[in-house]
Amino acid sequence: MTKISDAEQIIMEALWNKSPLTAHEVVAETAEPNGWSDATVRTLLNRLLKKEAISAERVNRQYLYRPLLECNAFVKTESQKFLGRFFDGKLAPFVSQFVGENGLKQQDIADLKQLLKDIEDAE
Image (cartoon, rainbow, N blue to C red; front, side, top):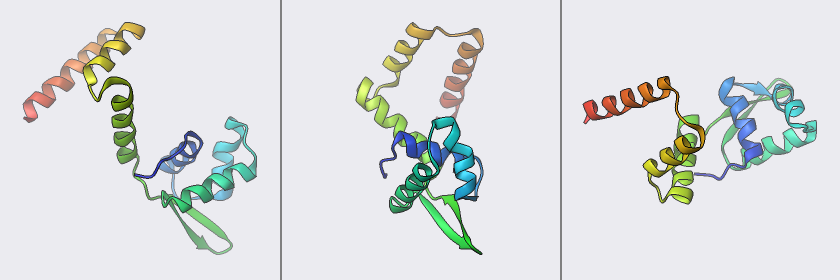
C-alpha cells in the first residue's frame, strides 16, 4: 500500500467523509483548521493523485476528487504497522499499555468482552 503522510491523510479523511469534492471544497474542509494555504491543499491533492490514492474527473471546468484507497484498508494497514513497530505485532501489550495510561470505563470493558465473545462465536 502507498505511504500516506499525516497531511495527506487529512485530505483523504475529507474525501472519505464526502465524495466527490471539488478542489475548492477540499480547501474549504481542510485548509483553515490546519493552517494551510489553498496551494498547500492543491499540492496534497496532486501528491495523492500521483500515488493513485485518489482520482480526479474533469466535469465542466473543475475536477471532482474521489478516494481510490478505501478507509478500512488504510486503517487496517496503519494499525498493523503501528502494532508491528511498537508492540512486536501483538495486541495484548498495546491494550495493556493503553489501559495503564488511560484506564477503562465500565462501558469500554463491556464492549471489549462483547467483541471477544463475538470473535469466539465466529470461530
